[in-house]
Each structure stands twice: as structure tokens, then as C-alpha cells.
Length: 205
Image 1 (spheres, rainbow, N blue to C red):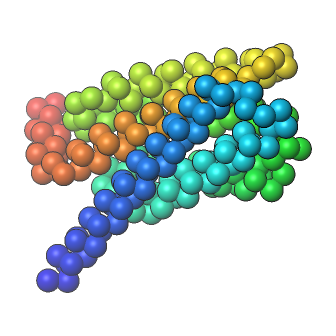
Image 2: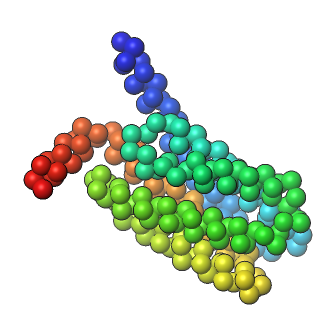
């Protein structure tokens, strides 16, 4: 009975982590769209940097929570502890001093995007082995993340206007996190079938 209760509690925690991660991905996507579509909303950068800071804290906190949710495959959350801490610290700094840190914002967003894209690329390839049927959507969006992150870093290095590119980068982070959470957690419901198929493959080899 206790074992069943523990399983139910763990399932509830994983489900809540999934919902929180999906919501944070949507928030990051919306924040990215705002920055991409209205890059010159205001000149000081206060609004833009505050939006980035709040979105970073939200996705960081949900990532850390997901890491400790004891998800069986740990695909969606396997590196979210380190990235989560980075996001939370970065977000707090942006909210405390948004205008003065404007010069660091493009570089920080580009690094975050490249790191997240690299993480999700590895995750997509590992998910393929677990039987995720639409792993390629995660891989495609992750590769786009890396590409946009590199472009953003190059433009920032040459001191060009990167406000819209920051929005695109954040939007891709949100989309990739949404795909990843949806597909990896869905596979967890078919644990028995996946493990059986995996064991059969191992035995044949």
C-alpha cells in the first residue's frame, strides 16, 4: 500500500513538473515574440531586460523543480539543474539592474540559447533510442537554437542591433522546451512496452 502511495505521489510530482515546464516554455515563447515583434518598444531597455529577467527566473525555477521530480528517463530535466541555476541568477541580476546590464544581455542570451540547444540535441538523440516517435522535432528546433545563438553572438560582437534576434532566440528556447517536455513525458506512460522493446533489442545484439 505504501509503495503504491509512493508511486502515486511520484507520478503527481512528475505531472506537476511537466505542467510547470510547459507553462514556463510558453512564457519564454511569448516573451521572445514580444521582443522579436516589438524590438523598439522603448529606448532605455528597462522593459526588455525585465521581461527577459522574469522569464529566465520562471524557466530556471521550473527546470530545477523538474530535475528533482524523479522522472524515469530524466531526458527533459537531465541538465536542468545547472541551466536552472544559471537562469535564476541571470534573471535576478537583470531585474535588480536591468539598464546597466543591457550590454551583457545579448551575449548572455546567446550563451543560454547555444547551451540549451546543445542539451536538447543530445536529448533528442537519446530520446530516439527510448522510442520517442517525434524526436526529430526536438532535434530540428534544437539545431535552429544553436544556429540562432551563434548568429546572435556574432552580431553582438560586432555591436549591431540584436533586439529582434534576442526575441527569436528566446522563442526557439521556448518551443524546444515545449516539444521536449511533451514528448519525453508522454513516453513515460508506456514504460513497460519501451523497456521490453529495449531488452529485446539488447538480447538480439
